[in-house]
Structure formats: C-alpha cells, structure tokens
Length: 88
Image (tube, rainbow, N blue to C red; front, side, top):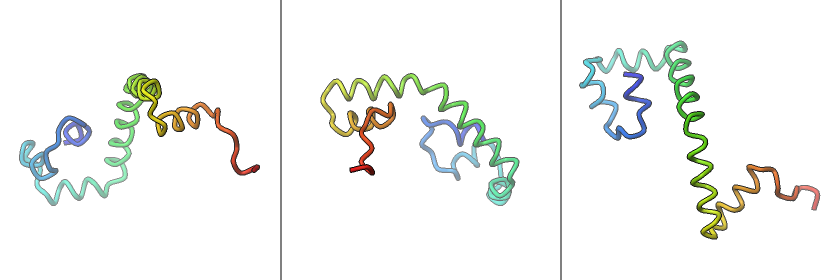
C-alpha cells in the first residue's frame, strides 16, 4: 500500500488503491495513525525526492532560461543570491 501511495504517476484514489491490495478501509486509516507507518512513508518520500532533485533543478533552470520571472526569483532564492529585503 505504501508503494502505491508514494507513486506520483498513480492518480487513483486511496479507495481504489486499497481495493487493489485488499486492505480494508479501517485498517488503512489505522495505519495512517501509526507513527511507525507514517515515519516509513515519510522516509520513502525523502528518498524519492532526493533521487529526483537533479531533474527538478534542470527544469527550474530551463524555466529561468525561458525568462520565467517566478522561476528566476526562485532560483536566486534557492541559491541565496537575492538581497536581504529585511535590511531595506
């Protein structure tokens, strides 16, 4: 069930995913209240997002090159290249 929840390509509802793996609704929501299960999900999210970081940076840079002002602002913020507006 955790793998289905973590798959960003799988846009099905939680109910559809529960039906696929045969997890009763009550059990699923009991798991979602279990700190160990939630911690596991969060650790998997961390691993997945770390693995995608280079692609995200490439996409951001491509948007900057196209002149997307919001992307340029975000890029400068992420690289800490923006002036500290608090000192103005």
